[in-house]
Length: 457
Image 1 (cartoon, rainbow, N blue to C red):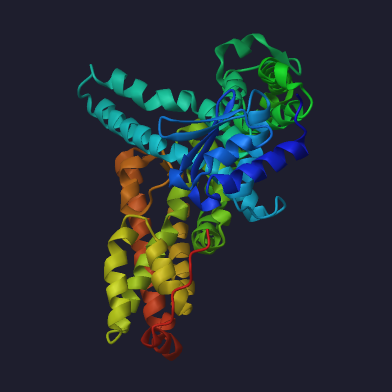
Image 2: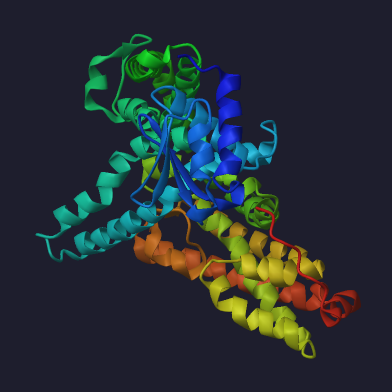
């Protein structure tokens, strides 16, 4: 029996209240025939009513999950509709929503990027010092293996985030890094394994999701398990080989060239703008657009030259917070907030200071941006002199970024420039806030204990 898209939506809508509603659903997945749900309170599910629903073939409670048997083909469409019902999303046209969903593809990869980045840095130190020659090849393998297959993880996460089957997203993304693509010629040129990188993997998995969903609505349920994956991999794979890899490779190359040109040619000015605007971008959630760019630079060059510049925004924030702490001697609650949030700020976690201190007070947020601009200009100035400072992973900033630093002049020079940028950001953020940031209005706001705005991500 073929279930229409409207029929799958009705079935998903009928199942939801019978498993306790959205608040009771903690996880959603599916296998070949079953909708697998994690329920906070399984006793709230009405098993008898579920079994009576037209389209439900059975109910199984096992392995800590509540499994609704729907059959092949049907289960995929119902799962997609069920996830839409329990997930409140902004309209698809929202820029912030699109950026947040793209960020959701890359954010789960950050722990591996950090771990491998630290190992790469340690391996570099050992190589430069000529120590433990028997261990360095192993460390190189540990540090590089993830990056060699990062496209597969991007494809998996993309399909998962955008409503496709994760393993199919990973399958088409794997084409990008498969050594055999060197035998394929596109536009008269042989392809290179890895061409297009994470951007190619992202595009391939997005296309695979569209193809898969198109097939789900047209292939008979009995043939869905056979035809849909085959058509998805075939169509998307050919499109990846004969279009996406070439185009994404050109875009990736352009991103790397643009980042290098920006800092080597207009470094001080570019650093000033990037360091000064990053806090507002974080506040608006638009910083998420930079995650694929960072990842592309790391994959392409071994490090991202943008992150150390952007990290200066946090330094300006720390300097501003210290100035507020000194100026507002009689605001016990604000000083307590700063004391508790400052250690995290030094390690690059700036949200407690932003949303607990500078943003509620108003003007200190602007003077913190001035400090970030100064630190960014400092790092950018040295980039103009040929001293590039990069980070081998994204996520950490502040003092936590030191183990992940890399550059073209050796670790000592790279770390010194980055530390100089931090100190500049601290000093200018402090001075600007101490002199211009704490007005009578700011003092009155702190004394009144105005509620802290909620974080907008």
